[in-house]
Image (tube, rainbow, N blue to C red; front, side, top):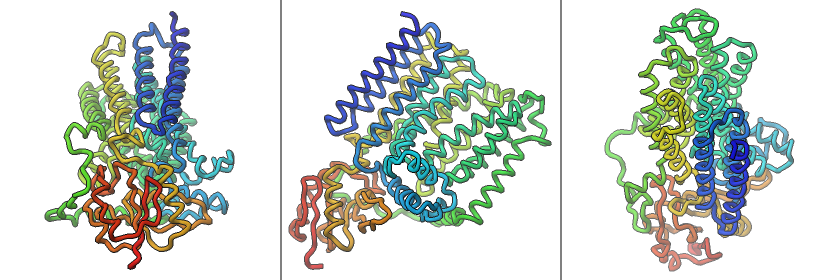
Length: 559
């Protein structure tokens, strides 16, 4: 069978697998395990095709399209699977997008920072105006942005320097399944758009530094501008990145520019100019137009002020931690552990072989990996400053590119017959697709969306109740209404009381318990598996006012 026929067979098998996976998922009423398993199988089939084909030259475009298809089907099907948004953050953005869409004015956005840098919400409003899908489904553009953008840009980035088409395609394969990108595609936040913009910026920057072409100069500046008005972190990431890149350039002794400008010459060095532009833009945005700088300072002071022994942990009596065994950490953070270990070794290897001294791309890649990696370190040392999910979302794509740049250099670009390289790719696929963050309803983790019973209970509360309803951390935040003319029902979290079994003693006016959720997200104690029977004392102190088999609402007549 020739390679073209094999490509058709690959595409046919991919489509059949997805048809089966989607059918099983919708029949079972759960994303897990059917869609993740389908994505893993399709990815392994792609790996088999690339490693066994005589040549893939001339097939790059359709093969990257297959990768985009896999990722798009996976993230889009998950996005539309529940009736409402997955995760908490999209609800907040949807509120602002709905208001802006109805008023036609982005100044109506009430989210700090994004009321000024409103590129993300403005993007949603434009999509809604063009497609008329409504606010909820206008956010479905982000699965497309990630699923199409990541594999294409990853391929284009490494292709600038490396001729090994097979390895470059495999880098695009891993870029299409990295866990945090999958998560924030079906759980869209402002950083979802910024992540693709950042990778696009790196592609343009390398071309600009190599050729000083006017087209890439304009694209690079536009990419910087779009990053500044989309998300809070990119300005700081860019500033650190350019400082690190300048350091690499100053350490280099070879010429890497096509126009023979030496890296050790500061005069007319575009990186110095970029540092100035980004620094000035960041200062203006953070100091004069938003309150983000004051928030950063406040967080830093809070971290410095934390001293002495930590508070005693909650006395949990009704639940068990889902990470009770060390090996279970792989189910939740296997993607993070694998990428950090592999990329760290790859980064040191690339620095050691010194090819970066004569390569703009490698200098840029090493700088991007190091600068985004600093945020991962920060999230480990100070998780209150930035969550590990957000920092890994910044880091993971550059970690993948760094790993494959090292593999290409180590194997001289030969995939076929390179068992270590194939093992690395297989481990990367399984470690990304098989973790909790890549799927919203894994049986061993908290579900990140509301099911029908929980939605109906919220509708009941919204229609018939007044005042505050007390419930667990996730249910308190995941509210279903985001129409501009509808007030939110007030919820407050009593997760600690749920875990301690003290709900009955809380004397709350109203309590809503999600007894159909085996595992809940606590917001401070990790994912916990709750034994709701331990909370049966609530029935003795409260009156049951609503129950549908998944949620029970209790009222306290004495309040």
